[in-house]
Image (cartoon, rainbow, N blue to C red; front, side):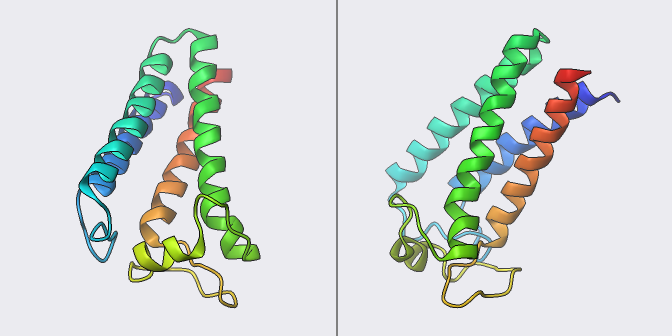
Length: 146
């Protein structure tokens, strides 16, 4: 199986992982108990459509459309890093993701990382999402340039 096929499989896996963890309460893997159902549906539909669009663009095998898809995956990963890893490493939070949101929505989920001072700790559900996003970005980029 070549890089292109692996990239497509990873993108589809990313889509399904994101949708399942956004729509299904799998506590303690995730904790959707504090979310309003409309919020979860909005997030699942919005991000899901973007990911599906990227899969479609990438599947065309047209280099510039594939590049748009890869750029989206880069932005998607950077947003995850800014949302989770910047606060974890520095204690600085984005306005859109204050510590109070973390405390109410993610405090009781599974964590694999050790605490740093009183900073938030990225939960395992998001660690897997970030790892899957990074691998998808890398393999899709390799496929684009080969």
